[in-house]
Length: 555
Image: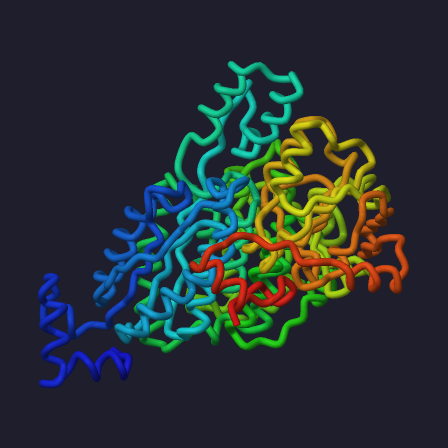
């Protein structure tokens, strides 16, 4: 068995006696310390539903490592919940947590000279953070998702957690009673796991499988299924094989593999946050990839799988029973680079030989795609000269061209108050600014206001644009990630109430009917909106974060 040179150097010989002694204080034996030391990176906690089952998953991973001849060394990383941070100041910390996760794993694995790592995570910023760490460490690694929760059931229909916020709007507008709303709250989340729709968490778990960093058919296994534990044990065994063969993340996460992953995410109508996190990941991999390449990939990738939030009658359990990301890849086979190596030890082509589509209405073949192009798009125009992001997969065809007067808010909180006062009218183009990576800070998601608007019956009748983000579970007419952001002096800072804004998603443009000279003159007279953020992590983040078009990474 081949051992990592650095790990063997510090543990062997007389010079390694003190290190061995420290390990032995925790119960490790001489036999344990002669084996490859495999890090088990666990984002388990009891604060985030998506990570709640990972204690049991980690035990299965460790059993697999032991059986294959390795020694597991478990340590934790943070795992905050987007759903709990949404709509309050906690959301300012959610995107910044991604880089902390990547750094913490890099530091721990490097400080202990570990031979390989198995990375456990499910949720929105955790999975990309773990993949970024794997890219930087470049020691053998496998990502093990925790899996989605099962759908709830309300009024004889299967639902996802999104329905709670959608129906908050219905409650506000008198369309739903308080008693029914309380019942909905009780039944929406019947188990732990990542949220039940194709939000950011499940988009990126599918992406991880598609780029070859998770075992085949593992992304969509529900959190509470025994199959989740079986897959975790297989990952524990497989990491030793990767170690023996010296297959590393940068051998797997090539540009071709990244494009495969983007195609799969496009084909399932994945979250806008995929673009943000992919740009961060390619930065960690030192891959030359430009944000406009997403349009080229989307334009040549059919939309094959429509589930919540695009189609609320389908949830992740339907995706799982159809075969998940592996079946999407099978249907996209002619468009993928099949020579990419994966953590299974096989090429993608070899993996797909045994894959069968179990529901070709849920995951359609290319010949019967929902649409000929994928689910995400990059827009540009005088409002977003460096790029903006939208999600055609969840926007009705008749809403992809919108024109209307701007109604401007300098924060999500201002916007939220206006909704509660019924100050939003049909035809408005709502502008929420100073919510970018620097301006927010932390690039908050506009999840709650958008869901309330839906519950009020205004979905598709107003548009929302922002230099902040949207949740992967949002639907409606929206454009986010507008870059440059207002805090960097971007044109969005110059918008005034009443300015006419034109959005054409099919043409990939976003403009306001104001001359370039007028925009420049307005920007000269604008003072940046300041936030009271203290001197903690957010203060550091503001000084070092890159623009959203570059992945909002720390530089």
